[in-house]
Image 1: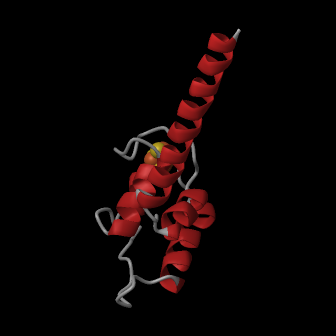
Image 2: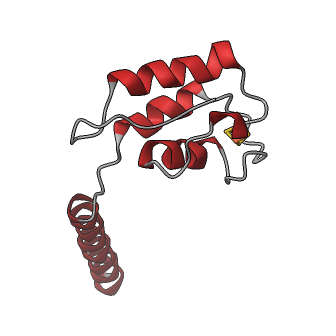
Length: 106
Ligand code: SF4
């Protein structure tokens, strides 16, 4: 009986140590994401169809915010009034850290 109890305690200790390791790793390795990516993603159609050439809407949003993609009309299902204009307006009001604007066009 003592052996079983000892084995359970050892497993609990290992689980606790691994859990603490995960918590520390999550804190140390945390990468802060640009909040504009989430906001631009919200304004895209979110069909995740890939017809823009990106893996999905979030990938397209990352490309837009990073400046790699300027042409919003690559999003084929996107609509000017409901998607593109809100993105342009949002990005106009949320420039890069150096004050420059994210370049996008229709
Ligand atoms: S084309 Fe538009 S809806 Fe489709 S994945 Fe790209 S951004 Fe999303």
